[in-house]
Length: 229
Image (cartoon, one colour):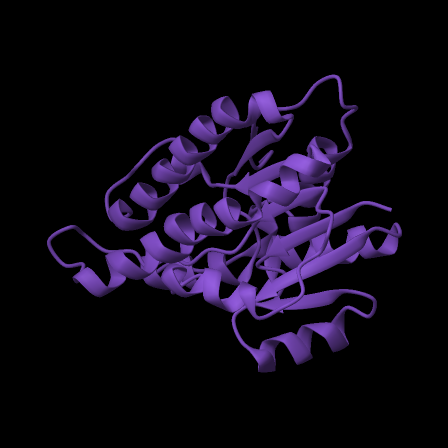
C-alpha cells in the first residue's frame, strides 16, 4: 500500500486528507512539531504514525529526523502545514516575517531535501499545498504571499531538477477554504467568518487525491481551486 508523509495533519485540509487516506487503506506518516502533538494525533488517527520535527526551526530538522526511524519507502510527501499573520509592510516586525518564511517555505524546502533520496527510490510525488496568495499578492498579505510565491518557485525548480529521477511535483493553489486558518484570517481582517462562503476542505483533499492517483505516465503540475460562489 502507498505511504504518504503529511505535514499539517492536525487541522483543516491536512486532517481531512489524512483521514481519507487512512480510510482507503493507505499508510500515513505525520510530521508533528513535538512529542505531545505526536501522541494526540496518533490517538486521533489510529493506524497512522508520527515523526517529530518542527518546521518553524528548519535548521534542526536534520538532527530531529536522524534520531528517528524513517520510512524505507515514501510514495508521496505532502506539504500542508502553514501559518499566516497579516499586516502592512510598515507594521510587520521581523519575527512575523521569519516565522512565516520558516514554516511556509524554508521548512518545506529542508524537509524535501532530507527526504529526496527515499523519494527518488520510490519515484514518488511531492505535493505543495500553496495558496491563491502564491499567485497574487494583495495589501496586508506581504509576508504570507512572499512565502507562498517562494513556495511556487521551490516547486517549479524542484520539478525541473527531479524529473530525471522520476520524482513528480504538484502545486495546489486553494482559494479561501473553511479552515481554522481562514477563521484567523477573517479575525485579522476584522470581518465575520462564514464557513459556507468558502471551499470545503473535503474538496481540496479530493483535488490532492486526484494528483496522487494519476497514473505514472503523467502528472499534474499546477492546480488552482476556487470557491464556486
